[in-house]
Length: 129
Image (tube, rainbow, N blue to C red; front, top):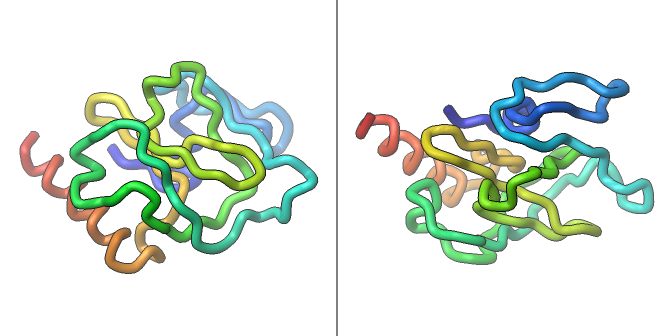
């Protein structure tokens, strides 16, 4: 499963959006609003800092740029879920994953060639199942 943007956020236990809202609880942790001092939504190109190798990130270089549009970010309880971080006033998990469940905060469909690489990598992973 690949959750994109809100899809990533839904993988967690709760969200602060619209009060305290229950998530799917697939991953421990929650979704928090970006700090008020930042321009919200976070919209535009930003880099990912790869934290560990993963098949989803095959052919993706560290500090590659992707297109983001969001006002909330995931805060995983388990740091081993984090595949990549992004800096936007704070460092947040921009890619999470474990086994066959992944979430990405950015929009691969708006991220040009690198976004297509992420989607192709996910497609290859699904074909192997």
